Image 1 (cartoon, one colour):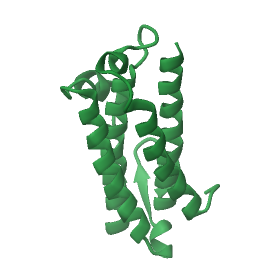
Image 2: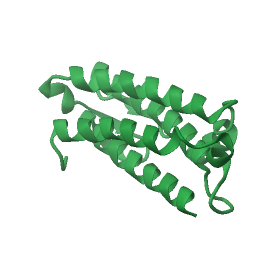
Image 3: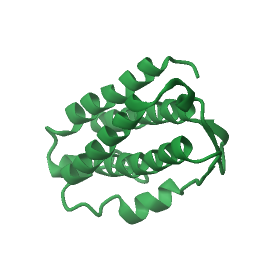
Image 4: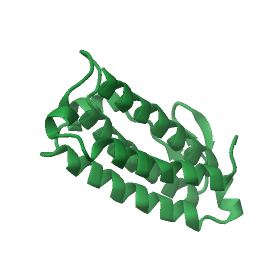
Length: 154
């Protein structure tokens, strides 16, 4: 893993500040406006982040509690098509994401050294440790925060 555990956890916490800062002052119309056809709107990105947080949290829990578990992949585009606009208000997806992120951060904070190295087998990525899950989640956050910024600039 490229970063220390504390660095990765700080990146995960920074996303909370950044995502809230980027989205809470936007109107529902601004949240639902995509920058271009076939691009996700900020609302869709936030809903996707909530879905991904659920999936990453499940993977985290499996790796910490089971011996070498199978970590299923999910089709993010199918989930986005089906679930991204299910929240009546975009702020509801943000609230869902925040609850899930805080729960996952509490788990990451509770890990002892050997739990960071526990592994499972991801269906597409191969072997993944708890540390890998944290790092991928932090990178995933940055990519989608950039996507929201691009959407708002466009």
